[in-house]
Every structure is written in C-alpha cells, then in structure tokens.
Image 1 (cartoon, protein in one colour):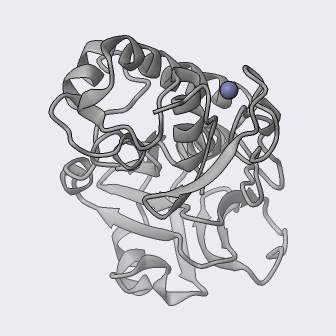
Image 2 (tube, rainbow, N blue to C red):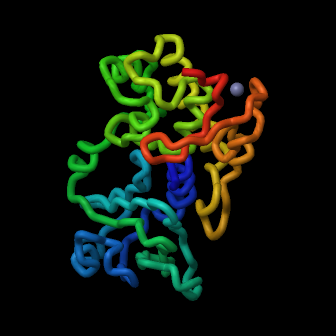
Length: 271
Ligand SMILES: [Zn+2]
C-alpha cells in the first residue's frame, strides 16, 4: 500500500499539472469509487470548481478547490495520472476520471477497487482522524517521547495507527524499527529514551530519503504514466526474510504482528 513517500511522490508529480485548472466533469466507471456518496452527487460538488493546490495529508491526496476539498486515497493499487487531449482511455481498470480545463483528464486506475474519492466542504472531520505529520517541524523527538509514554500498545501497530502518526505503513515502520533497534512487539511505554530518539531520527530520515527516491515500488505502486519508485534497493529488512542482516549477519525473521507480515532482525532488535 502506498505510504507517505509514495503519496508525496504522486502529489509532487501532479501539482504542476493540476494547479490552476478547473474541473469540467467527473465520471465513475465503478460507482463505489465515491462511496458512500453517489458519483452524480460528488460530480455536482466538484464540477465548476478550480484547483487551488494539490497536497498530501497522511496517506491522503488533497485537491484544495476554490470551495471545498477533494480527498483521494489510493489504498492497495490506486494509480492517479493525467492523459492529454485526444488520448484514449488506456485500459479497463480506470475506475473514475476528472475532466479538466485545457482538455486533460485526471484518471484513477485501481485494479483492486479499494481506492476512494470524496468531497469535504471542510477538512475538520479528516483532521480529527489523523495524527501529526512525521516530517512537520513540530514533530520533535520530545513530542514522540510524550506520545509513547503511558501507551501500553505494541510499537508496530501503534506506529501504523493513522490517528497516532499519519502516513506510516508496513514498509517504513519495519525499516524504522530496525534502524532504531526496537523489537516490533515492544510495549511503547517501555522503550528506553535513547531508542525513542533513534526511532524519531530513523522515521524522518527514512521518509526523506524515500521521497528523494520517489518512493518504494514493491509490486503495484506507480506514479506518472507508468513510473516506479526507486527506494526498494535501499530497504534493509522489508522483503528480506531469511537473508543476512546487513549489520550483524543473522538471518532476518518474518513473523506476524497485529495481522501484518513483519520483518526484523532477531539480534539487532532482540526484545
Ligand atoms: Zn542484525
């Protein structure tokens, strides 16, 4: 599933093309793409509006309109890209598209059909469900330490909880916990201060570097017409089960933590 660096990559790719354009139409080939709203209702909310900005919040792509906001979530296999005037629909997996001024179309391809598009007059309901942005200046090591204190939850599911921190998912949580030497099932409040600092540093460094590499394409992630992220080669544990740890040489483990396949080093991240 696309995480913060992948969504940021999509946003940076689309922003220069979309900002300043008017939405001239909306069609859904898969009616549930705007669920729980009907596509016709969603179209009435957005057609005629101008796109003022394109940005990311957590794993959401936001189109700020001159009135209200479109929010898009890629979920498993969503792919958002633009085609030029006169270009035909590329394939059968296009679930929805926006017509835009200048004759371009913004297409939403989604093989698995879990992705969603919606409209909000005000972003408050979305903000209420999302924790802080890990790359924001105010996300300090002290803030993270305070957030982890008195939390009796396992660290991996806690970091993946979007209401705790927005934007992290399976890949970058496994990588950050490895970099900080923290067992994925460690209880949050028991993690020593030094490791919390290392975790904070690891999260920010990983996300920044992954954005520089335009995200991680493990199987599905695409941006632009058909481009892939280049961060996969930089992963230290994710997808490397049974291979030697780059730090200590121990065979990396893959176990299930909170229903998610979890990659870790039994020695570097010993409980
Ligand atoms: Zn190791």
